Image (tube, rainbow, N blue to C red; front, side, top):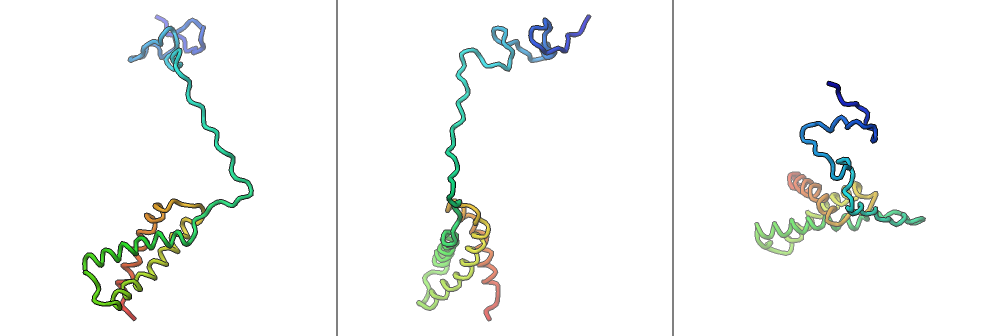
Length: 147
């Protein structure tokens, strides 16, 4: 008994070495199994992308946008404090609450801007990025004793 030739060239008269493998089904109408079926639609063409802008600087994340993303979490903090502790007893207490949020909000915005400054990020991504910075800074400033 002779083993099949390992010559995969078509027209050599020998079947390819994988032709007798378990699970092998010969192709339709003598086509090899990896060839597309006759009449099958071709793959769609790759879309043409517009050329990059020439002479225009790339869009970047602005500090105001990063500040707005951090301010979202400051607003969430105010809503949570009002929901848990109720309305503040006076205007001075409300001013103290909002004043305590200014530094963590500004520092979180600086951190977000430092990370996202190279290109324009979507606002919702900036909000997600600002969350851990804001809440960690807020916890640190709550834990620090007043001077």
